[in-house]
Amino acid sequence: MKFFDFSNMRGDIYGGLTAGIVALPLALAFGEASGAGPIAGLWGAIIVGFFASLFGGTGANVSGPTGPMVVVFAGVFASLSGNISLIFAAVVLAGLLQILFGVMRLGNYIRLVPYPVVSGFMSGIGCIIIALQVARLFGHEPAGGGTIPALSAIPAAVANPNMAALLVGGVTLATIFFWPKKLGKYIPGALAALVIGTVLSLFVGGAPILGDIPTGFPSFIMPEFSQSTFLLVAEAALILALLGAIDSLLTSLVADNMTRTRHDSDKELIGQGIGNTVAGFFGAIPGAGATMRTVVNIRTGGLTKIAGILHALVLLAVVISLAPLASQIPHAVLAGILIKVGWDIIDVSYLKNAHKGPRWDLALMALVLGLTVFVDLITAVAAGVVLAALAFVKQLAEEQLKAFRAGEATSTTPEERELLDRADGHVLMFDFGGPLSFGAAADLGVQVRERTKEKGDSIILDFHRVPFFDVSAARAVETIICDARHAGRMVYVTGMNEEVNRVLSGLNADHCLPANRRYDNRLDALKAAVYQWEQAQADKAEGADDDAVPAPAK
Image (cartoon, rainbow, N blue to C red; front, side, top):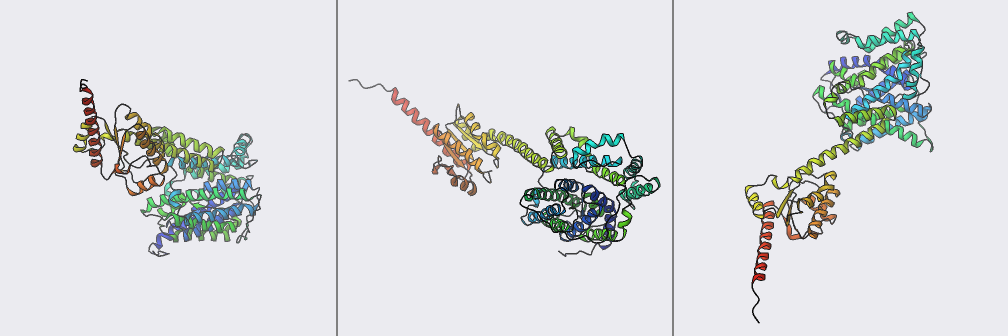
């Protein structure tokens, strides 16, 4: 593949220019919300957007600051007390971790987060963004960082609003929510809201504004941390790295669906990591694949990395030439834009129909949403993934046990059925039906004991559909075989492949199984079991006849 593909040059130019225009108000708003300032948001969009496109694995992806990343970064900014060296040390370390994820080929694993968990934490982040901006919409600044202080500041802000800020913010909100779609093809709603709100504030007066914004290129920041702050910085970096990875790969999936292409997850993580590492060295806020900007890029023709690079160069030109004009933008205007961003992040489409789907998924989504808003993101995602995995394992185990209970009736041939009927229930066959989860393994021994209580002089364990084994399954099979042996039952094994056999023998889990009771196919095992049972019955009958003969007279 070519590093640069010039076959779609016209579409890439138009897509990059449009994505750059869309990114401008969002970058300013995200920078302001992060605590690092609007210029840090612009430089984040420029640096992450450029390097993630240059080295990433998704052609149409446009990267930069996103709502989820800004929420986490703002928390990091507050928890590290505004110490620039520590804050951007966390950003640099997050970028290096993302590069490591890509090198270790973890991209496909990160994408395995269940949808209710993704929906829950994304919706939670949307709620946080809205909560953080409501007081600013009324012209007030929350007393502290985080969701709780922001929510606590809302009643006072509503009771004592700055009318100029409220008017400007209200017009901004109305503009961005009701901007005509036909006009949106030429002028993005966010950009129109930014211009209209700012111009209105010049006539109204009294709304708090951003003030002086630095111009020119950013200064180099040397990250540093001490022994006492290392764990705090490392935890912040891990959260940023994981969230950025998930956010980017979800955006890559959206891009794949729209362009009918397939991205390289590991390469995408490396590109995002390089972008965030460089951003950290220059005081720019971290970013990830931005879904809205990526969709805009694709819809206006962008398909290759050239579009993402051009988007960054457009923003660079704005920073160099137009930064002084941005100083007049009111906080309420950016708050209005961010409230719309937060609303777009909330998974409204799922919430509308969630009651028609599985109740457990809805409960999981609500739990993750609550943990995201009121605890922290890493706890929310960790709890959601663990609970989703346990629920899935439980469902899988129930299905596996159901198939196991129907073992004798599973895909038996007429010849096998005839042999089973001859044994009249004294020979039982168990077909495992597929790979065994650790959830099902725990109950296998109980299932066999229950089915062999009344009859079952011999049992056949059929492994022909079991491709691999883990320790839990091996110990379960060991229990079945040893229980049968202690109860005087014969055990026959069939269809065991080399890997399963290696695991069993390696763990010495087959010590109760004689070597001469292993068969390659089920029919041979069944013939041997029925023959042995019939021989045992004949021996019993012969012994009973001998007991019936009268003893000779003395």
